[in-house]
Length: 152
Length: 166
Image (cartoon, rainbow over all chains, first blue to last red; front, side, top):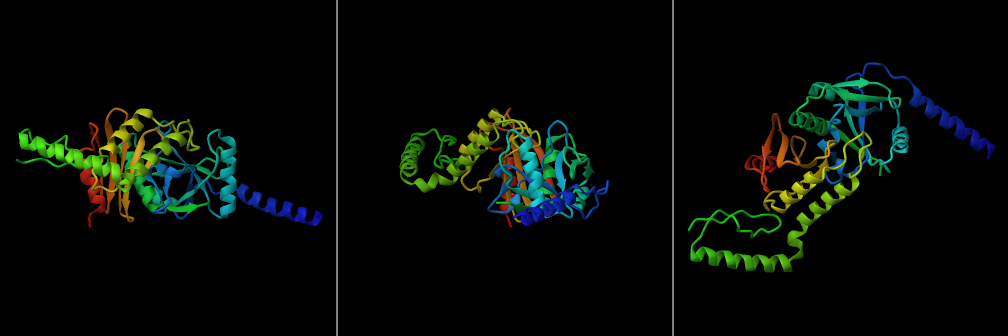
């Protein structure tokens, strides 16, 4: 039993360290990033694609929160989402992740800015126009190029 | 007698927009109303797609009634936007595929149509009877704002049809 506990601790530490690895300050074009989907209305289960609303920026800050998922497993991605849920009062579960290459975001005319806040590997997609109709076009482009990864 | 036929999702025999005022036009109108009432009462499946979308809309309302429903600080669902969306869906043309219902971080209800990778059209329903739309049709992009009065504006309907055209 002790042996099993020790193994578990080493195993857990290994993965925690992996999540704590400091990533480069610049996001490369081929780096995958993801947008957590905490509501079923943010994606289509039938068409297996995220909705463009899932990629709309915050109306005030004009930022879109994403997570840098390079080099980590699905279980790590879920672990980060659990931290977000724990912090929030309104979230109960994570449905999945809308994954997109940073290069696609840059090609659309937006930028990915890592800030590691409120958690390590956090970044914002910035450079959004103020007009909603323009934001919708960008969001639609991101949704079209994103892959849906469902957790449950 | 020439009339404009406008089928709606909630009542495909809604002939309130018929322009005829003659006695025979009134007769046709009355007959259609009776047929519509019979079909809508007897055929449950007829109204089910609309019901399903309305259920989705209600689910969105329930899920997103609190701030930060997306974990990123989104505003709670705008109730006026919800009401306007309900009205629009009730008057939805029956020949248009029903949309997926979502909500934007500013609290507006969004309706989205997509076909394949290259065609996507999305409208956000504002509380003040206006819709903001954007669409991608291959290499072409459209965006804009339209005001409405309980029915989707013609421009919007044309773009939705474009999603499903060859």
